[in-house]
Amino acid sequence: MYHSNTYYTTAQFAKLHGINKRTLHYYDDIGLFSPKHKGDNQYRYYTESQSIELQFILMLKDLHMSLDEIADYLKHPSSEGFKSIAIEKIAMIDQQIQQLKQTREILQKRLKMLQISEQIHNREIRVEQRNKEIILTTPFSFRDDQLDMIAQKLLELNISEGNSIGYGSYIALDKIRNHEYDAYDGLYLPIKKSLKSKSVMIRPKGYYLCAYIKGDWNQIPAFYEDIIAYADAHHIKLGKYAFETGLNDFAIHTIEDYVSEITIEIED
Image 1 (tube, rainbow, N blue to C red):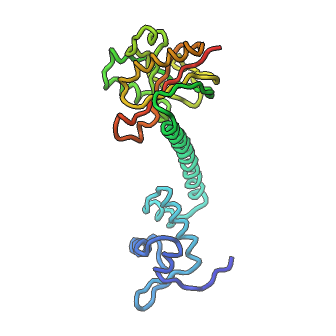
Image 2 (spheres, helix red, strand yellow; image 1 turned 90 degrees about the vertical axis):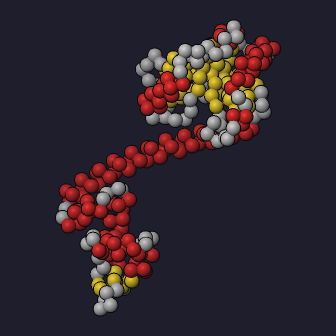
């Protein structure tokens, strides 16, 4: 491959590769990457042919290799050494891609939740069609468990699934009808795929009664009265559980702005 004999000053070569010229000075000082030529005035001059080597160094550095590791390889380059680095770093990149995809998905779902919270009317009740949802549940009762136990249960769910899309609580409709509003059955976490576990619950694709309320949680018991009245007035047969979750807890300053979503499956 043809390379010109053009010489670049440190500033020019640094600009060409999008780095600070002090980085080139440092690499030269530690013997990692030195200019092809130094003038009588000790000015450093780099050639176009050195670009490939510098790009290789910068790539390895971006892949979290230490400068000592990079220097060691450059002193003893080999086919087997490069294969080892390439295989290791490709596996690391693949893992990072998966993590970024998961982060992107979480951000998309959070954004959608926030948009819904901004579009609804306070105390709005309506029928919506929802997709199938798989959730991981854990038994829990607000009457018996302490806050530190709640945090521990949520942490266990999150660690087991590596998922932080959002948590919620669920309560049996029979308890709501009996005005046992604080007798929650458990906490739940949406997951991507089903597991062989008694803790997994499937919420099928179909129609759900969805209700939205803004403000403190202590308003929810009275709101359940409105939900039940709405269902009865429209001859809607409700499923076994009501599921509660916050839509905008990650984007508010005060509890007055908090939007709760309650969803209940509609049975045929």
